[in-house]
Image (cartoon, rainbow, N blue to C red; front, side):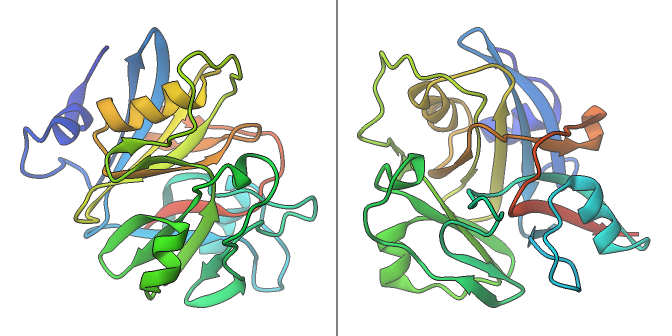
Length: 245
């Protein structure tokens, strides 16, 4: 395992605050490399992006950068949830306080339906990962929200259906949050990993209270701090951090 820079101190709780409100770094775990960006939700603008002003789906990090305009900078971004062939969100999606798709609480197919799944909710100066039924029960007022699945970590515990001896490996990405909602950690594996390995990384290394899987076939990250901006498949929802110039 390797820890470097401000990210390591933030994860281990050895510093009162991040040197930067968003800090990206690379970590080694179980012989695999992960790219991790940690965001201070009380200081940064975390947003979700799906469509432009004309209603057309954006789909690429470069499109989001153009969408936010010349007076803002996309300091971090990642694909932010599963989507249908037309790139519409599979589950609940809220952007700028306006819901686009409803919450799905029942069984469904694929990884999204590997219950329990969850919702990433951004509200005020905090962000939280909720298990879907807890989200339905609490009905938090989210300015932005995206539903995906499965949950990776639920109140400090791994998803109960993850198998330590699984042979299903993909490049995977997801998000985890601290109990107080102030620290948000986004991660993508740089090599194929199992759900058990990915969930364990969020629980044991990133020490997140709850964490949610975003995807595994279109996983991409925009991290200018690391001179990285992945290209490839057109995406649906995109989560990003915006700084005003």
